[in-house]
Length: 311
Image 1 (spheres, rainbow, N blue to C red):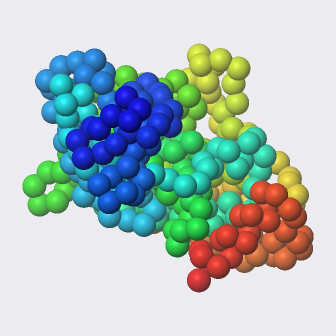
Image 2 (image 1 turned 180 degrees about the vertical axis):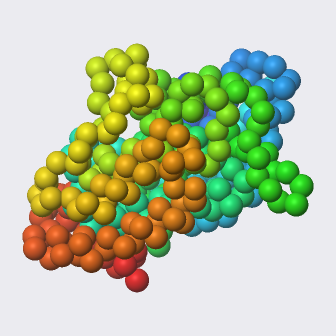
Image 3 (image 1 turned 90 degrees about the horizontal axis):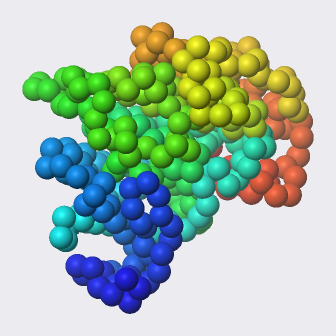
């Protein structure tokens, strides 16, 4: 497809592929770079799945937040879906962590940015359902350096009349089959069981990401998919280690509440979690001031977030 036109866009190259299809770099009529995600018809193999997927995309296209990668255009061709988004210049949080902890102050800044973006998704009556470090981007040279992607394949909750949010009554739907195996590590217990989920499932995933940023470890370490499922369902996260200073009791309390097995035992809103996170700022600032930024990941994060997120 390189050099071909899809709708109003010219395909420039392949960015990558996954369980849903292929992502291309393309150029719009104005010469701007965009990313086009192709979702093949065989992935959405029934009319019901297609209709529900389109509903998800329509809701996602209405979300406007600086920390959420927007959907610019939607169209289909021969039953294939094409989702047009800005081409992100940057790297993922997974790349920058690379199984290493971030300085507490940087992890706090990234966490607050993620929370703000998640809150806007939830306010739209949606749940991301695929939050993980590879879907969190650190963007080059932007006013909002943290960007959540792949919100368009989330399993959205239904918005009832009078604006109340309710979950689908179906326990397992098409979205469960579209989440790649690599995302299993960030699923909530109710996702793993194939039950209906709501925004509190994202809060669990958020807790896993925050734990990894602080420790460089997964809270439910496992050697196989089966043992990972078992750990998510039954095991408690390991106590936070010391690195380079002891993580405070308030931060550990935040993580344990976010990672509660039952949705009703977690934070009920992202804003509540963010408020508690912001309350740890004095401790994070003290840790930051005791050790100067070093070259590499710490220096990069610190210089970027110091003038953007701490205003």
